[in-house]
Amino acid sequence: MPSKPGPAAPTGPTGRFAPSPTGDLHFGSLVAAVASFLEAKSRGGQWLVRIEDIDPPREVAGSAERILAALQAFGLRSDRPVVFQSQRTAAYRAARDRLLAEGKAFWCGCSRADLPASGVYPGTCRSGLPAGKSPRSVRLRVDDATVRFRDAIQGEISEHLPATVGDFVIWRADDLPAYQLAVVVDDAWQGVDECVRGHDLLASTARQIQVARALGLSVPRYAHHPVATTPDGRKLAKRLRSDPLERQARGATLRLALDLLGQRPPTGLTLAELWRWALSHWRLDRVPRRAAVEMPPAERGARVR
Ligand code: GLU
Image (tube, rainbow, N blue to C red):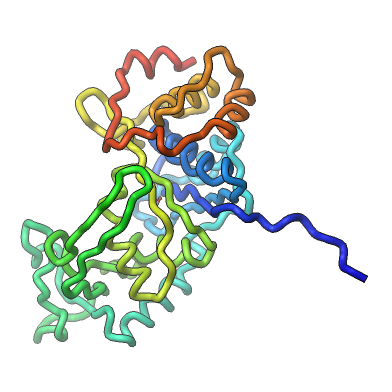
């Protein structure tokens, strides 16, 4: 007898939103949540939330819970249990050790003060620790890698890693996994095949592709949307202490996020109606191919309750 069919396996893409708990959810990060959610869900895919809590010095107590509650209040729910990177250190360490064993990464004894102002690693420890230096961090060898990829919003991107960063840190001197390693290990582990996120992270993408290739992992599709900035060009971020979203009218805030993303919902819709509209009308090709979109303070302020 044929077995009873279970729920249909998702056939669409798997996207994710991966906030660091360094403050409350703010408008800038809500845009990334909305864009990644709509790009995955409008094509019948899954959307996951991952809390990137691997940097205790930068963490703000309670912000992970507040971010998750704010997402939920907006109607944004992870399709699978939320992953906390702080629980995954063993996986990052295993990836690091494999890269070391295969000679694709090396221990570096340099401190920040040893590095040139350009930030490009001069290769000091790549052939072994010079006398007098002890191991501090682990760097991935970039050799002569030029990484090319097609960003689904920003178009063709090419970065010659030896000129922009050189061998880069995948394990920090304070014995913590670097973001560039953890994000790649987890996207692969969770089956994430598309990363929709803010333009500020485009500068990390070539490094992440290089890490994925070194580990033999498949490379997701990337789409970097413009970030919201203040009129003086600063990113709307936690550091700017933008108003916590709880205090804003959620429908109006979602509309602003959709506006920034180049979508044009009709006026007069409630939050639930806006989501319904967005899920059936979302078009990635309408997202502006720009690094940033300015948000005049009056516009932001007018919508705060
Ligand atoms: N955790 C990173 C951040 O909050 C984002 C990671 C990503 O989307 O790749 O900036």
